[in-house]
Amino acid sequence: MLELRAITAGYDRRAPVVRDASLTLAPGEALGLLGPSGCGKSTLARVAALLHRPDAGTLLLDGTPVRRWRHRAPRELRTAFGVVFQQPRLSADPRLRLADLIAEPLRATGRRDQAPDRVAELADTVGLTPDLLTRRPHEVSDGQLQRACLARALVLRPRWLVCDEMTAMLDASTTAALVAVVEKYREETGAGLLAVGHDQVLLDRWCDRTVHWDEVCQVPHKSGDLSPVWSR
Image 1: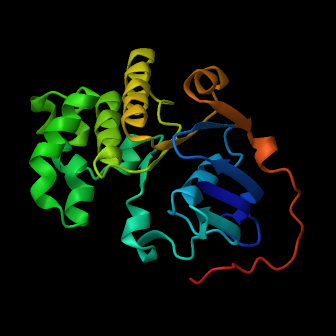
Image 2 (image 1 turned 135 degrees about the horizontal axis):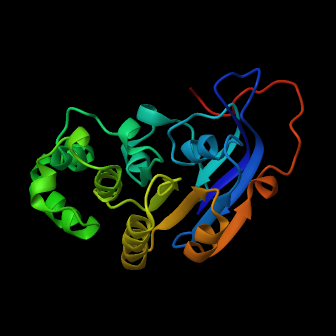
């Protein structure tokens, strides 16, 4: 179970982007988080994926509070999450060929020997041909690059997927293809999914349930101390 309780977070403690947000995601569940641009969805998604330390609140994973974030989090927690961002060109190293981009998490966790087989398997899964794997981000389309970014998110076989506006920049056919890949992965592994977006039709079709941002942030934030409850 992934639980976020009364999360307050942002990039300036004096003006938090997210105030008192709470949501729960069960293993194997697909949860859609719906809201307008700029409301704080992406920040909350980064907190959920352990990529951004909140100012206040609690995140529990399988009932245990998370106390460290980003590179300070234990490896078993960091690798439990796979994340796909809205803009692939901002989340991909422009120097890497697509094959190396997909294999990046394997190399970072000391599993370099698994890279050739795993990259080939995932390239086929997401619809990347071998010739595309030798190209760098500027040599492929947004849709092709997002396919590689999805493969990268799946390469460590995560228990939780966070798709933050994953399809916002894609055409309808690529959107359908990538959603199908995510759903197949979930069926095979029982992974939970947090899908963030502003397209209610897509989220309602994709997810088991959809919650609106106003439901997540039910309690108005009050000024005062935002001391975190975990170690830095």
